[in-house]
Image (tube, rainbow, N blue to C red; front, side, top):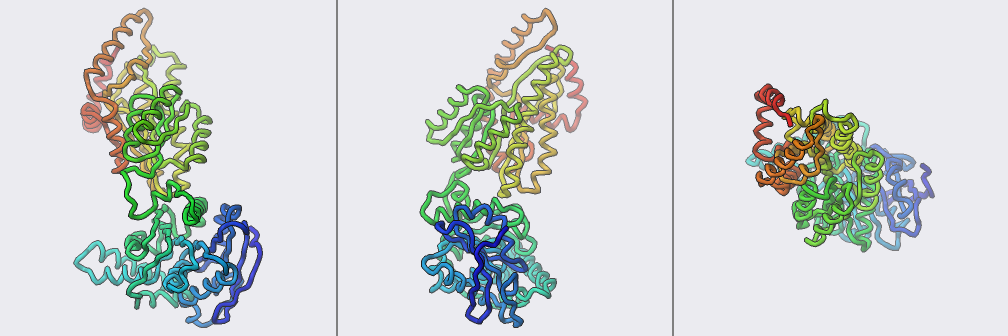
Length: 545
């Protein structure tokens, strides 16, 4: 990427700072400050996503890139980095406040600048990545080590101290580390409070600054937003889109725009329902478990995207949510069509953002032994019940991982996944495949901070029996009709409705439950499948229509 227009700014101690400007000259100004041992190019990926709308100023910290390299250790004290920031802003944006995005030691320098209350009004907003205030870090470490009676707090403070000590020991060639680690632990201001809007982008896998260090930041920042990202120290390199979106949403809001949903969710201290400021997508939401689940999430504050192959029914679900004061958007979707699901995901994410919870619920029932079921029908059951889940995960899980800020996937299986029935060969097979697919995917998503729950309902009173196809031997059509009626009566008499499954789904997402049977019989068969699987296999032999 081209650097743009180059400038040279002289700091108060005579050090020359190389500054680069690009982007939209009429947009809000964003100043990006890198950490050590990087240079301004560490922001290239983020700049490419912001330059159409914002004026972007980057500079090389002293000792980096094309800026001067002082020889004195004292020249790298954090106060000098604050001086450099002041000089750059004064030279390139003298007429108004700027928005700041800073990382690592660059962020530490901006915190230092904000401690100078006379100058803080030059900053309209501050987004900090992997670089806490030296004062706040001191209070966390020293304060924790003086509280041995609080074991968890003490252990965390000791862990952070050891990480800082290790960082200093291995950074013999980094003057900024040598000049500041010891000093930051030796003393701190008694009251380093910040009045400007502050947004923390917290790298939960940062090996140098642990995520819990920021838990006490609300004490010092009266207007605070926090976004945790499953990433290492340099989030701007691993998740440039996430950083760019976070900054854009923050800047636009500070400039007077309505807050984006993700920004509302990040606001510290904001009162909200369990799933307030969240977006939830539910497939198969035209009736039954899907509709009940959509309603349940909406009641807990979520904005809902509902989809179903039947347009009238899914529109009715959206209307029910709206009538109860919620917000819903409905789509027609055949989950067995991979291209259609990908296009649906793209439309949803472009219009509303990546859903925080994705419920892959759509499915069809089927009854009949393997030899009595036409090949195309057997394949269709797998295309919808398994393929629909796979397509939904492929389209949305990748976006959740790329976003990096967590989320949850719910795959609706069935107790039929672990209860073999010869009279439901295709259905049991499809749900067992969903169960195993989910187990495999859960391990993969966990590393990215995305949860996955497998829901296994038992006998639930929905319209599934009425819509289920029955395949039976020739000449037994009358028997099929009678059997359907018997099952409808059985399911209705069970009085275990889809609202209970919906409640289980909502609870499982909140608790990040891995596998959740729903209904007593589902739990019973789940336990039996673990303890005495042969019992279920024997039962399967007698399960004929």
